[in-house]
Length: 344
Ligand SMILES: [Fe+2]
Ligand SMILES: [Fe+2]
Image 1 (cartoon, rainbow, N blue to C red):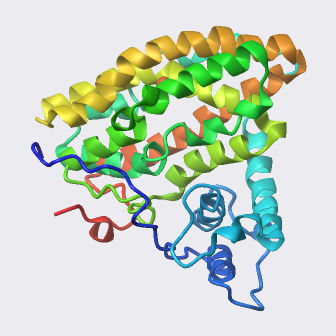
Image 2: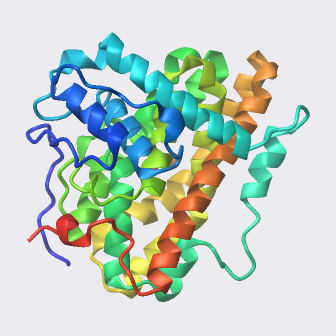
Image 3: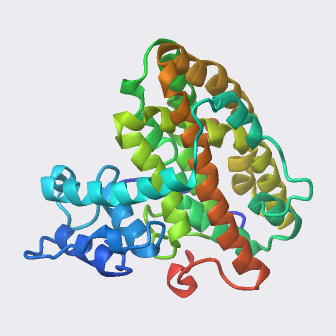
């Protein structure tokens, strides 16, 4: 767990399609493999936060990132697939709008301040749990699951750049510049996360842990893709980004402590230590200039900023419940620990 040589992220391996988790995801996988006469069931029959719908949506969103082995790149803009994606998004977004109420006068600043109220005893917080009692195995599981986002860290937020103007655009790009390494490939945050994974003995290939990730993890990543890909949801994307930056610094400090406590190597600690400093700065930039600039230009979007903040919290709470229930029960939080495996 200490001296493995860092591996540079590359496009040399393209992920394989994952295993379906029900009729919807099986149908989507069939479409992606080019099968004909595939009958796609109505998403109305699927649980909006469940494995089947979330995996189907995740796979369709991946066409906009890295794609899958055997699926032609051109299928990203296949009108039939986009129609299926739209129906899945309607179901997911409908559930979020119902579960995350936003009042007409709700303030984005108050919603951000709510995020900074730390639970007195840390109950319900994954980073408190891992700092205080997390095992190496649990930290490895956490990293394996979070790799679904961190190996494409900040990518979904880049889609918002053409939808912003002036102060908000300049500030968003400044933060993204840091996320993408400030001009240095070895400092790209996704690469820093790959270094952490290598240190923990995990497999760094993009998409490796997709089959292992429960619906609650997929939903957190799908939320960013949903917000990032829709111009109409640009303010929700900004709200999401602000949530991440505001909560990251204290959470990262606890995760760095957890990794030090279990004797992880410098590369593992570095990813979170870097975010303690960087995100304390990012938080201020996002608050004052990204949200401030956006709402100065488009004040009617404040409710959607609040929606983005609260939807992020809603899905992160669901993920935390899933992880903590498993770990407190002495179980793995992965769907298929034996398949997830680790790097040799
Ligand atoms: Fe980052
Ligand atoms: Fe950041």
